Length: 174
Image (cartoon, rainbow, N blue to C red):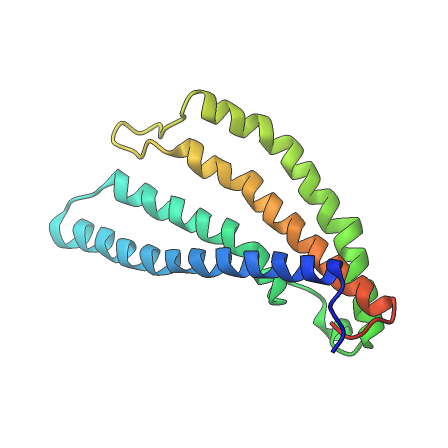
């Protein structure tokens, strides 16, 4: 059996990284459900509320979506016009994936990184915390998810482009 090319090995490493991050982040869904249940129980069962718990749900929800987005892209779970894509040949799908990654995904993620960086740096410079008196202190950590999201998505775009190029160059199926 032939040795996979270095670029395909890179794509595989990116895929494994995003799968590992996505699987770890998926546990946040359980956290959100359990804590939300607790907040509802506290509010309607005991007439008490907790800003700290409520904010932890929002933070976990943000982390779940930001960290699992690249894994979702890898698994083909993002929105696409499947009516055309599913009926297309493998080469046509490869062209769509390559163009989508290079012309849409990667430029958008680079722009997001560019604009998010000063925003995140300011949050870290002041160790930004919640505006609520009893809120969580880690707003700067949540804002850090923005460039991390962009980086993971850009990496997955590179993986997608490598695999599409591999198909287009006639070196085999994805």
